[in-house]
Amino acid sequence: MDAKELIFERHSVRSFSSDPIPKEALADILEAGRLAPSAQNKQPWRYLVFTESDKIQKLALNCGLIGLSNFFIRKAPCLIIACADTKANLKLNGQDYYLVDTAISFHQMMLMARSYGIESCWLAAFSEKKLRSYLDIPTSWRIVALAPFGYPAEKKSTYSKMVSSFAGSDSRKPLSDIVQFR
Image (cartoon, rainbow, N blue to C red; front, side, top):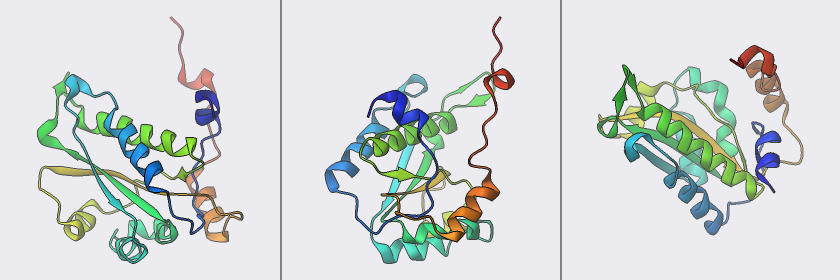
């Protein structure tokens, strides 16, 4: 799969098969995140990886009320939580870069996953307070996003179709709305 195909055909997947992710594929996915660029090479990203079904199901129940819309994560064979250590931040022009850096790293992991036929879904609907408490992470860490990873199910569930529709996953602004040539 070339870069154009990886990017142009990427989409959020919310229905997964139960097939586990091979260890070598998961290692490459995590390595892709590790190799991402960051402001002054601060590398603020920290990842929590869950591959046991019972732990993923339990985590799904601890995302808070807003996280109930992401209940489909309980069926994914892998769940990765992207955190950023604010101690590894670079602040320029009044902007904290730990969020940007972690987002770049996490997206790089998602693209590497696609190269193996493994799909994902970027999720921001969770209660950071509730999830933070459940995970017992350091106070300097912020939870940036979480994503289920897995091979797509052959057929989308009704719930998956409904959530995808609600999220507007198929809607993209035209280039003319987002690009200015000067």
